[in-house]
Length: 273
Image 1: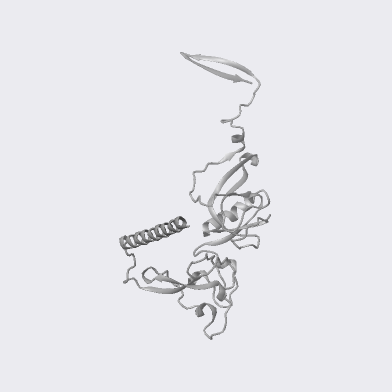
Image 2: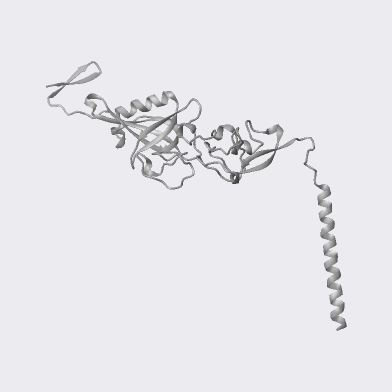
């Protein structure tokens, strides 16, 4: 009994000593770590998204929260008062919507939200100096329905050319275009592919003219890019002859007699019908 009591006292003493050592270690580490807080940095409270907010989301109080932000690196046109987002000038509740997708913790800025009572139209997704252009597609030319808003694509044109339009050729006419919508779907967070009849892409004015002309003279097809690949690559025309790997012109068999003519050391062959 006495031996057990002594063992218990020894165990308690060792445990207390271990706690003391751990506490001393933490204190030494904390004193060695540099203090990173700068008292001269001015902090302000701004309104950020409390969760991911896709295009077209009606802004509600539950979607917003305040977050501390250094004033020196404050994004342009941010909001410091939620009421400016939720109520109009008369103090009445408004109907603002998200017109550019926001992610959790991202500041709300003016260009990513609509005015009061505004609908989430496609025109609000088109960047400045850009245009939206719709391309006719099917389950093949539209990458089997796997295209979704936000994807990047290249546009190929297949058409006939040459004498009597007897030769088919394919050219890549535009690269790295952004899909704004598939049919009437413009929500970027959708995960379900659809078989669509049209794909709407974001283009410049000149690119829109090229697409309008291309749709009249041939067939347009889209190729899906890797989400992180935005580089333009060198392109070349592909014709029917390139499919077999045969280069050069096809020899044409003609009837007649071949006559050999020697001029010095040179020999020429002439066919006489």
